[in-house]
Image (cartoon, rainbow, N blue to C red; front, side):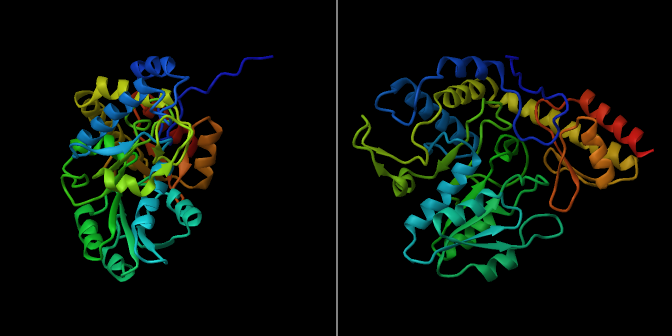
Length: 352
């Protein structure tokens, strides 16, 4: 039987995952059989998870953070909505999200039976605050903003959203699943030190260069996680706040190893390289007379048209589209200038 090999990343332009750091790969291999879902039994990986949460808290401006390493952003986002629903005093809670919110929030609304209200965006692809004002009411349990949107890498006005949540005694959640490892090196206001937010999604297995799966859920205090607690009478630990039961010790160990190696200087260097690469790409594509959405963070959207997009995919480029149909390139650590030069050369050749 032929041995299957994973595809390489040499033409992957739209993924928000990347090749893990060597230290993360090595650490993950040592913890493949451990289960942080049973911390009473697997004490070493439980200690590593506490370290992972502490480093994530440092990155996100939250000393003494509560939280855990999740399977990814989807789980963390669902859990944030679950916390808000369980805390709400109304039987018919709703949450307010920008139109740029990740599709995991649609899953959360369906699974948890919570109404999702969607606010439109401004011309700059951030949420329209006047629309949020119209949607928030006394039954709103959660107001969320995105810090590094999936399609355009935009950052919603997080302090303003937090103020609106506080005004109706709702929680405020920030989805920084991708953006959390680049935003510390920008002037954006997005984290716990900038605004009175309650929970955050921040994923080491994206720009953090950990192995998959390694998402992250942070909470301002352990009392918020208590809203999730379920008794576990047949485990050594007495309760569990996670959505999944058995979890990957490999993901936890890999996340700690990557963050030990890279926070903060390595991540700052990587952000600078990624941002410069995406700005170069935006200029190069604009010079070919295509419309481009300029990168605020290292994501570029390009209106190449459906035929050219299909032709590029035919050349092996893994290139997704925004909802509006633009081609979307993400400046992950594996995306090099040489790779982008090859991509632009193919655009030029195929467009002629």
